[in-house]
Structure formats: structure tokens, C-alpha cells
Length: 463
Image (cartoon, rainbow, N blue to C red; front, side, top):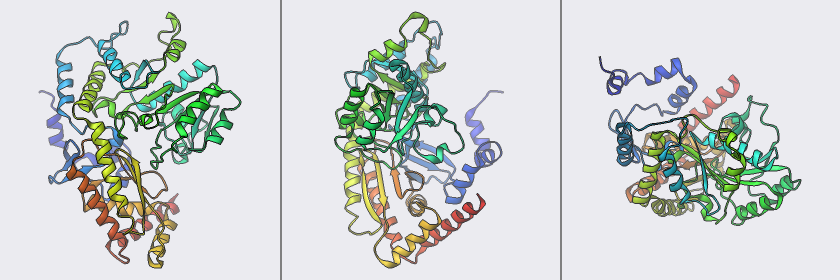
């Protein structure tokens, strides 16, 4: 009997939630069922998802930025199919691979001129782990500085650099010598670096949790301060990189040259995990400084042919379809169109971002009836108002979005970079209608709000 994935899908298509309930993370199933996101998706193409009833959804999360070129892109599929049929040698341990060399060259053609070496791994958190090790070895220092509310991954070293307590609680103790400073606070950063004992400062050019943008001079001053005090400047572009913000790298908006760039997510094309670190020649030559140190850091599957082929094909699609330029244009249109609604709606504070990394932030209203309704939700759980927006966006407007972080009133958009004019209008019109409904008190959407508040209060009592 031949093995068939298609047959497995056909036989078990209605079992995924039961399987997860029994064998995986049942709390995730409970979350999806509670907020009504428990759909059986059967197909995905480009920026769209389709459920068992063939309802079309616009995916504004793209797997947290993984599907920058859209889902199931035919160019990447073709590259992977071809790679599978070529019978290439793969992961020959006493050898180096051609495809990884080609991908390294292709990536380095996009980075600042000071970066000319690559290290490959399997994920964003592995890239950060590598950066920690490389920084410590290169500088012969232990300390790593990161930002409050920063996010760099969930393996132990990376988690030591995460500035969100919800991810850290109960997992300590963390790596010694790691400390945080407020994002955008140059005085605090200089104080942290001034003893000249910091190996590296790692920062997201735009913070993912909340989509917090830096001041215009922030990253340039970060570069200056790191150089002044001998610390390496590490840009975590795992989410912001590869066209997401309307430039190939987010750092390009501010014309800075970090010592390392961590990358992953979009580089995979959404098929085979691939992460990487771009770095200066000095860092590479310091860490791998002798033949007997050629293997002091690595990852078994990191340069596998499928991952490298996926990366090469993805970069080709980015170039051929001008997705960086499209991200800049469509993203700017969405942000300006949503900001134009702020005069209509008390709850809407602003839309912000760069390219197709967008935040829509809400605020306490001024009118008494709306203020009382807002206060009720905030008392139950801070940031609950956003759930009252994202759920109707999904159920009624078929727009997949998510709150930008724990306890914040910010909805985040990370859609594929191939959004069309139709998609732009879909996003703006959906938000317009959903936000309009929140201003109708009492109303259907506030019945949802009461249910959410009730669940939140029960959860607090249970914990």
C-alpha cells in the first residue's frame, strides 16, 4: 500500500482540533474555540485562505511574516520539486554545499557594505543564539543589552533577551549578564554601555510587539554609541527584514550599518525553515580563526539543499514581482487611509508603521457612554477592546488579524507583500465598519465585549 499525504488529509480532515486536544497544546484549541477562530482551512493561495465552505479570507498575519511572497508560490514549489528530483548530495558533513554559497552571495548583495559573511541556521531564535555566541567570542565580553518589550525568540539564550514578562515567567534563571534598556532611550543605552563591558546591543529596528518605531536619529546613535564603547550592534530583522517595511532591510530606512543582521521567517518562502546571520568579516574570522575551530558552531540541517533552494527562489520572487516596492506603496496607502478615519472615531488613536508592518492603536474615548464601556473591558483585562475588533474582522469581514502584544490596545497587520488594490480596500473598509460598530453602545459588538470580559474574569479567578 502506497503512502499518501492527500489520503491522510481526506481521511482525517475533521480531526485536527481533536488531535491537538489529545496530543498537543489543548490550550491553543480552547483559545481558538473561545474567540471563534476554529476554522477548517482546506486551501491557501497567495494572500488568501479558504475554509471547507470555500469562504475566502485575507490573511493579514502571513504566519507572523513567514509568507511574505504569499502562500504556495509556484516558483518556490517548482524550485523545491526540482531540487528533490536532482538526486543532489545533501548535508555531506565533510564538504561544503554549492546552494548555500549561492544563497549567501545573494543575501549579501542586499546588505550594507560592511557585512560580507553569512552563517546559516534553521530559525530566527537560532540566529539570535548564534549572534550571542559570536558577540561574546569576538569581544571577549559577557554582557548583552536588549530593549524593554523587545522580542528575539523563545530558546533559552534568546528568551534571556526578551523584554516581555509574559514569555519569561517561570523559565528563569536566564543567561547571566543580560539587561534591558527602554527602546528609543539613548541616555539609558549609553549608561548601559559606558563601562565598556557589553558584548552587544541587540535591537529590532521596529519592535514587533506593538509595532514601535524608533526616533529618526535613534539607530544612527545606536551605531555611534556601540562603536564608541566597543559593543557590537546587532539588528534583529527576523520579522522586519526582506521587504516587510518597504525597504529590503528595515535598517535601510535609517542608513545604518550594524555588525550583524539576524534573519529568518520570510527567507523560507513559507516552506522549509531557514535562518541566518549576516556579519562582518572580522566577526567570522575571529570566531572561526583556526582550522581546529571550523566546527565550533553550527546546526545539522542548516545548509540543507531544500532550505537553500527555498531561499534562492524566494529572493528571486521578491525581485521579479517587485514586492519591496509594492510593500512600500500599499502599506503607505493603508496607513494613510486608516488615519483618515481617526476624525470619525473616538476609539481610533492612529495607524502607524512602515511598509506592510502596520499597527492600528486604540485609545480611551472622551464621551461618557463610550468611556464607561471602555473602562468595563479594561477592568476585566487590559487590551480586551482589541479582541472586540479582531473577532468581528474575522467572522464578518473574513480578515485574519491579531492583537499586537499582551495587554495592549493595538491590532497588528503583517500581510503578504503582494497585496492588491482590492486587498487594500478590503482592509480599510473592514476596519471602518468594525470600528464604527464599536461606537454603537449598546450594540451587538458590545454583547461580544461582555462575553469576552466574562471569560477574562473567570480566567483570572481560575489562576
